[in-house]
Image 1: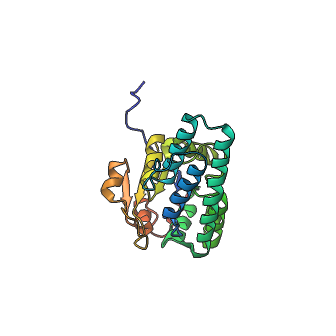
Image 2: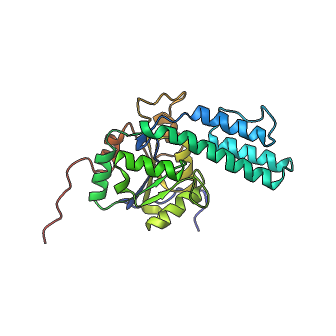
Amino acid sequence: MPPRDSAPHFLEPPLGVVFDLDGTLVLSHHDFGRMRHEVIRIAEQYGVTPGHLSPDEPIHRIVENARAELVGSGAPEGNIFRFETTYQQRIDAIEAEALPRTVARSGADALLSALTERGFRLGVLTRASEFFARNALARTGLDRYFPYLRSRSSPGPQKPSPEALHLLLREMGIPDERALFVGDHLIDAECATRARIRFYGILPDPSEKAPEPVSEERFLAAGASAVAKDLAELARHLDVAGPVRPAPAG
């Protein structure tokens, strides 16, 4: 048996591609800072000590830290359940505000059309709610490409848990070694590398004003097999940038 930390074995070509949604395929410019502060405010309402949670952490880390403190302090189970329900409802509401301004990222339709024509199975793995994800895909016309989707509303673990990605790949019928995950955030890279799935990073769209944008170097250090500056370059990485090649005669 090979050592557990040996490099994963990938087979060519990939048969299925899983995409992150917001920032990768669509641009909605969520107010993540507001979301983080709201989660902290709600956590403190349910017993987390003020000042213990940092708005500089991603939302899933804030939630993990809040949950750990509530459990560690012996908070009633009902309090923890109400915290989970209340913060999710608040995030859902803030996400919904972004739907009217959500657009497809440049090159998304062309890339997904080419992948579909070549027989790739496509899926979405997102930390957005089911409501936002479905409506964002429908609003941008990308929903026709995605029979498979897992969101934070789906039962079971959420990204960046590797099991979230494995569950989606099992739904898609794609073996791990023939899968590819594409995302624009280090959380996506973390999810893929922990799941031992090939990962391609895509740099943030220039219209996004991230305080610390992800660089090619950071993606590669996080385990990315390749990094593309945009979806057109990603199409070239996947060899789907040109017209569909005719099937050989015979």
